Amino acid sequence: MTTAGRKLKGRAITVTCENCKQPFECSVSEPKRGKGRFCSRHCARSGSFSPRWGGGRSVDRDGRIRIQVLGRQIFEHIAVAERALGKPLPPKAVVHHVNRRVDDNRPSNLVICQDTKYHHLLHVRMRVRDAGGNPNTDRICAHCRTPMKKSAPAYCRPCGAARMREFRSQERANANC
Image 1 (tube, rainbow, N blue to C red):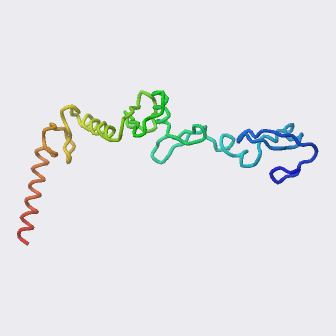
Image 2 (image 1 turned 180 degrees about the vertical axis):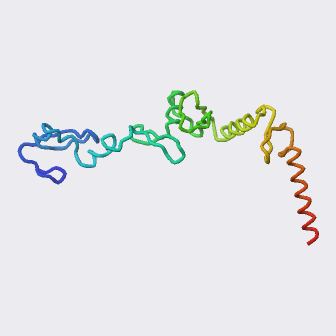
Image 3 (image 1 turned 120 degrees about the horizontal axis):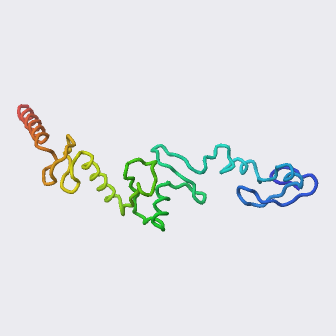
């Protein structure tokens, strides 16, 4: 009788693989010697049995933490938000990190946004607050990033004047050509 390409000497017993939970046959003496736990070499060195196993947590290039849940990789902040919400997130929902650290996945640091538009609005309001303005009444200049009133145009007065001078000088240069 052979199993996975090896011949079994003596009596064979059926054992369940500790990794994939599939039944396989091994000789009676293997479990006594500490062997016969896995159906193949692949199962013996994969998943949590691998010497490189990090507990199911890994960090991607952006610094976000991935965890393994039920055999699939998901972002940890999504799992934490779903656990806090008590159900899966809606299809268009986005999870926002309040302190902007993507590796800080405490429930108190996460905000569930209904869509990307609302998530973008939170970032705009945070930029105004960081510039020293009031997110309810101010916005920031598109050039120098200083706070100004929402009713103002995209640029503050000094930046708007500088842009207008530059525009007029280019206009004059084009008219002379």
